[in-house]
Length: 500
Image 1 (spheres, rainbow, N blue to C red):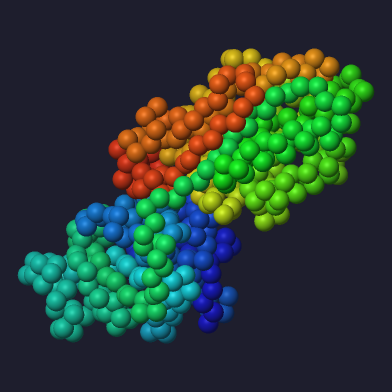
Image 2 (cartoon, helix red, strand yellow):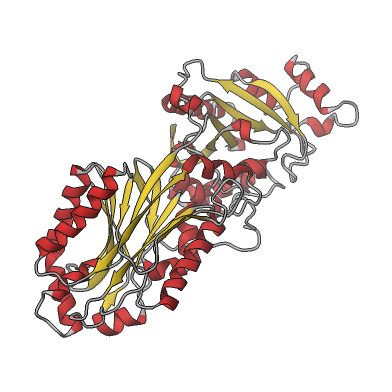
């Protein structure tokens, strides 16, 4: 027998197993388990015997104190999708354990619980909490209350296959919750809230006392003007990086395709050929920003740059340059008609979320922020901030980016940041005028900025805008804000299908 982490290939077999273990109850949907594997893969286990899945368990991390005393299974799992998983939480919450009926009495459940306990020790969590069924209670419901039944089981007068097992595995009773699982008729919808405490837990002072998680962002509203060399461009970029670093910013954010400033000294008038010539500076661009991120100790969203790849296609790519010297990239997914017509730009096809020392972030280039599905996918992957480098030539285009960025902040309870180009490049065909008013936006609720605007630049002036976003406030608001856009989604009515 092997106890291992769940994999995508196991999903169909797990759904079939659940039907055998819990007949009459609603089984997992495939998208539930896919969400578990996407959000918290290390918390999902299976028992495999001779190549067959004969047991499984699922879990997520929460701060249990943030949930109502009478919470339900749907509350604590976000209707089974675990998008409320909090990697900085204190408690592992077990949401299901099941063992194939033909393989019981082989200590499969015990082995799965031991894996959970090892995970809790490895992650230094305080405890495991479970909402356990009491499936034999329906036999006694006419003669005793749930509390009386639980007491009888605790004294070993009555045997309950779930509660008795949990008591033997070191769990202690916390309380009994009604209406926990509406389709659990055997338990009369009741569940026992139980806890196993990790005696090896080491309190971390910063976790106990941290009441905020500030992240400082410096948005660069970049002036497009004629230059005579790549060195001129590098000097301008370094100046703004230095400004952001002096302000102790965690991120410096540059605009979309601001490297087209290099076209002002490239002797090529045909737009498509000029862009191909521009791609020859890709290595210089990457080396410049990698060096700046490390030297100035700041994460840089390096705007975006046109890159010719091995397939001879040109892509609009935004780069993340971390301050530890590592690099990530996000391809622009939606290409504007203008980009196709003048430059022949090809589209990307993956929504990425990147880990940083300031939490998870996403980058959605200009037009991409106008498609709400992408922001929702990034949020479900754990992003707390979406950075949007943009380049627009008139007020109408800019407002599309701005209004959509603010809408995405509200819809997804997330911070959004837009950084645009200003100025003029009369020598560059199709890049001659710019319009921008860069900004940092928050959800709209009482703990955030009054207008949902953390900071905004003046329109069409070269400047920086510096603002702090608080990831702790964001986390709290996602749990108990005035409105709960993420928790209140109707997965039973609609869903987004991400095909990557």
